[in-house]
Structures are given as structure tokens and as C-alpha cells.
Length: 365
Image (tube, rainbow, N blue to C red; front, side):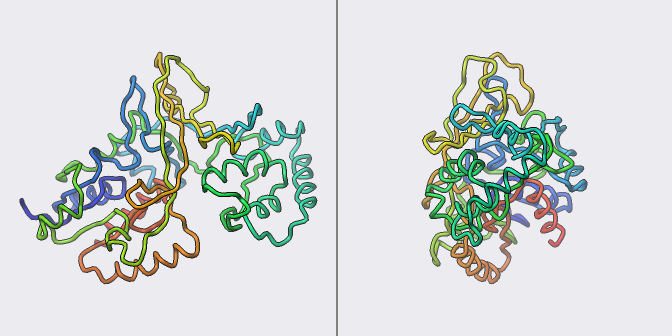
């Protein structure tokens, strides 16, 4: 097998941007991925003419014009605006928390009425020094918002009671006192027409790509394959968990095709009751304003993670951050290995921040 300048481990967004930038500078890159496809967690597959976000909803949003212009080289984006709704029992609420939410919850109309109601409930909580997530939420938003829109959803996400979760998980609650359902404040937002997989495919043009390839086996068989390695997998796995495993939350998806043209009328619907086992339902066609005769939905179930499962959300509490810092010390001693991406940096990234980090790292190389 030929020798490369770079072996890039992971064909997700970070690895693909690195490959694109490095090949553009004349470097040779081999990109490998354990999965049978490229694009990592932003992989989309076409079902019934619908681009299905196989690993959960991904809405591109950024306020960085440089990043927006960069990604628009590889796809045309539509004008999708993320406006999720939340279901609590037989009640329907707009997200993020805004005047539509408060009007529905308390039968009020003005921002002043909403502020007074929140202040009243916060005062009634009597909490001045929150000791857990429940107390933090009550001290920020009062009982109604907490009970209907935060408690059950959060407990499903984390797999434990809000009284057992640390207060710092909710540093603030994003209350908006306008009738605006746009979830993000970013100037640029949309979904790539035709899905994300095509973007990654274009980024990887000029590189050799091998999917269904485990890095650790491949490296043992090809120890001299590349001058340098860019590793976007789990940093603790790279070091064989010698200091212990970092913790994640995982997600399980149940996806089905339905013989109807419109199941829920919105791309994202959250279910905030603890008794409903899934956290949300995604109806994929609405990301691209689809008019197909059938629809595809995915129910999302948050789950505990263990080694061997798919890692989604780093548990960035004090204990895990301290463990990651020790792994970073080991990583700094690895000659010719660059760690990057969500798993390599043990940090949740929005897509624009992934691209920004990859461009910065490629520029340094």
C-alpha cells in the first residue's frame, strides 16, 4: 500500500474538512472510517425520496459569515428555520420559551405579564442557593415551566431524577419576550438541499477513502502508512482506556416509514413527560419542505453509554473533564498525532464550530 502524508481517522465533518484543506495544499490523505459510510453523525440516507438524518436532526446555523460562505461552496442551502414544539400531556407549546409559550401556558398576551408571572413563581420557590438541577430551574423560571417543559425531558436525557443532577447543567434559561419561534439567534441557518452526505463527499474529493475500516487493526497491519495521523475518534479509546473511560450519553433511534404525507406537521416535536419513553420525534421531510406521498419519522431514546456503544454527548462534569485533561497530557506526548473533533476533544460542537476548528488546525499544519 502506498504511503501518505496524512492518515485521517474519521470521515465525519472534521476529518473531511481537514482532508479538503490538506489535499488543496498538495498533501496526500487517506481517510478511514469504522462505519460503512462517510459523513459521521451528519450522514443522510434517502428513503422514499426523503433525506433521513440517520443519527439525529442536524440543522446548520452560524453567525460566522466566513464559515457560511465556506460550507456554501459544497451545497445549496434552503431557508429552513428550526422551530420545534413541545408536547406535554394534551398541551402543545412553542420552543424556545417565548411569548407564544407563555401565552399558551398562562393565557396572557404581553411581555410584562409574562415577566411578572415568572418573577412571582421564582419568588414562591424561595430558592436562593440551588443545590441541584431542579432547584436551579425553579429559581430561574418557576414551577410551571419547570414541571411542563424541563423536568421530564431532562430526566429522560440524563437517565436520572433532576434532584440528582448538578445545578450547573442549567446555567440559564433562554426566555424570549417576543413572539418568535426561531430556535437559533444565528444570522445564517438552513438545511443543505439533498442532505449532508453530498457535502462530505465533495470535501473528500482528492483523498483516498476506506470505510468499514477499524483504525487499530489497520494501523497494526500498516504501521508505516502515513507521516502523520489526524485522529477524530475517542481519545480514551486511542490510549486503550488506560486511565479509565470517559462518560457519554448515547441515543437510540427507531425509524419507520408511514403511509401518510404528513405525520406531525413539524420537523421536531419534543415530548416532555417522563412517562413518554422517547425524547422527541423527527419528521425528516419537513427539513426540506417535502411533498412526498409518504413520510419518515424517527423516535429518539436517550440511553446510558458503555464502552462499545455509539458515543453522542460528552458528560462534561468535573470528574470527566479532569480525566480528559489527563488524556490531553498523554496526547501532547504523541509525536505526529493530532487529536480533533467532538470525540478527540471530548466536547460537543455545533457543525459550524467543527468546521472552524478544522480550518484552524489545518492552517496550523
